[in-house]
Length: 112
Image (cartoon, rainbow, N blue to C red; front, side, top):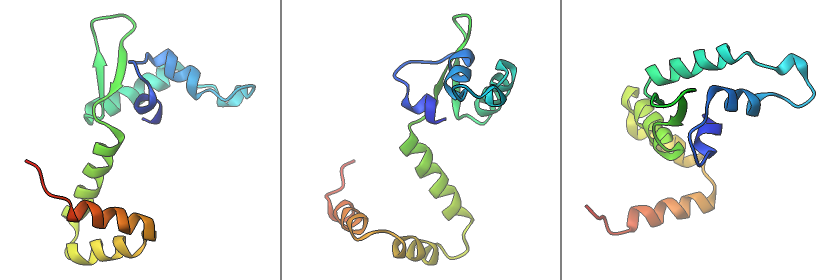
């Protein structure tokens, strides 16, 4: 996902395989079929979009890294019996700078 989020343009499975390969380490080389399998699973989960109009197919992330993280946080909070306790523990683990940023966001006027 990191490669897709960081890319300015859609990537093919071969592009991704080449980027994932460790230079000079034959043991780390991936088969393109392995990359395609992972991409198919990510597409099924809605994390990746496939551009089918060209061959080879090109892939992009369906959402931004930040939107994905928000979805994960909302999912975690949705399963918590005590959301306030979860939020309190999360806030207790952030840095003073992050706390100040959070306070500024909470205090900012809301736009619709």
